[in-house]
Length: 154
Image 1 (cartoon, rainbow, N blue to C red):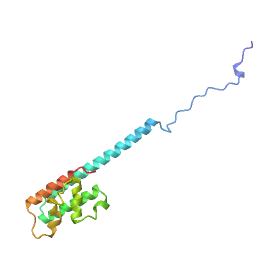
Image 2: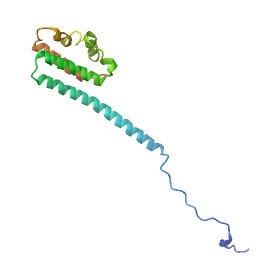
Image 3: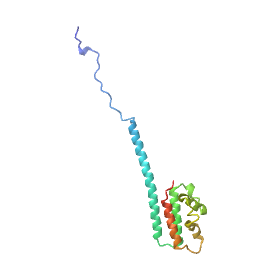
Image 4: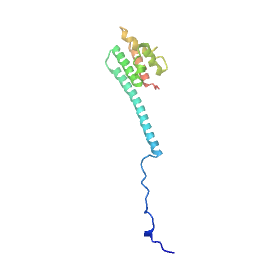
């Protein structure tokens, strides 16, 4: 047999495989990205919700400590309830409510009629009365609003 000269053979050089591309991402990376996005959204949602409650309780405490007349205090409390409601719910649900409808709407998270038939009545009656509500009624209203702010809605 004839020895074969390697220089004369039609062989090609050694070809190494191309580097692994980073795109498209493997399934594990997609799952990790989705998990991070979901975790970030949930953290934002719960942090915002807790921040709203803390701010509402802080504002309630500030109203209680301010030197105001009873009527001014009730106006401040009513405005606070309206601001918190507008933050928690859509404007369509809250903005147009007044009087008894407003109090009935405030009762929904409490599952009782404490606004429309209890201490919350002061919110719609006090501005039109010549006499100011007594301290006991005002304290009951503060406790009711504090309870309302702390309620877990949804």
